[in-house]
Amino acid sequence: MDKILSKKKYIALFVGPAFLMYLLFGLIPILYNLYLSLFKTNLLGDSTFVGLKNYIHLFQDQFFRQAVANNLKFVLGSYAAHMLLALLLSNILFQKIKGSRLFQSVYFMPSVICGTAIGMLWTFIYHPDFGLVNGFLKAVGLESSVRIWLADEKTVIPALIVVTMWQFVGYHMVIQLAGMKNIDAVLYEAASIDGASRWQQFTRITFPLMKPILKIDSVLIVTGSLKLYDLVAVTTSGGPNHASEVLSTYMFTQGFKALKFGYSSTIATMLLVLCIGATLIINLVFSGKKTDY
Image 1 (cartoon, rainbow, N blue to C red):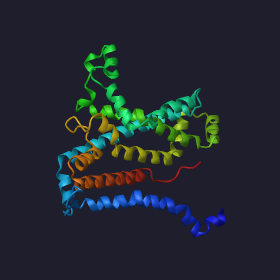
Image 2: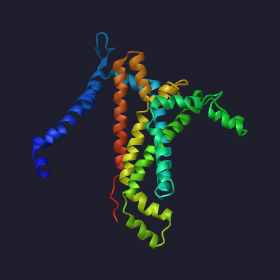
Image 3: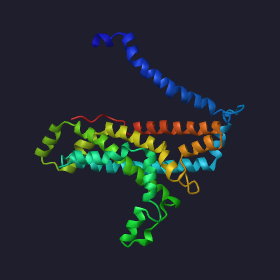
Image 4: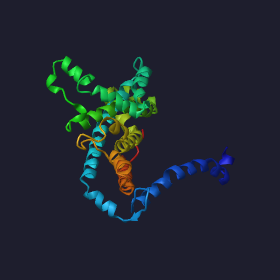
């Protein structure tokens, strides 16, 4: 195997197909999107070169600014909910409690369900008349807390964050649990002999050694929140009054409903910039000397 990998033609043979797929379905569409963002076009008739006018108009667009603000709310809310709850659940299951594998499967299951199906399911759960949420609140005597959850500008984003948490917290829990299991058990044995509590073991051993995994998980949570589309499209379509509008749904509206494909490409470019910027910030936050024992 070492002899094979030492020859460049064999390396090209292994890497070539994957690189070609990335080129065709990754890099070329990105470059074409950048090119398209410089035009005013509906892809059906003649295109007009407008240069950076789409980008200038973008920052004057109040709905774009609101979509960015909504995306940031999703990022902050989802990150806090996913990271904290996933850490809690993974740390509990790491203690080798009875039925640990069953709980892992149950928590992970929603993440493999189609996002459209999740959106339809929670539309019924949040239904103001026969939904489970309002039904439960009425049953326990909290009628004053009953809301039209997905049609209220104040509650729509928190309600959708709850859905994303229900769907993906098990996914992030499994990632973090895998990171915990990769830590040498000798460290915990030594800490137990020295009288360290489980909290001290978590803060002094588990958390520091999990930083590389947490960095990857943070990138997945943040970029996933920025690219969120299917859940919002199915449940609210960006409403009410653009209160849940995000960049992906606004991009879809401008491209496939208003037929402003040049402007839609501009929104897609800004979404790409935000994802890259968020990844760089996370790498900077988690940079530093590697913890080793």
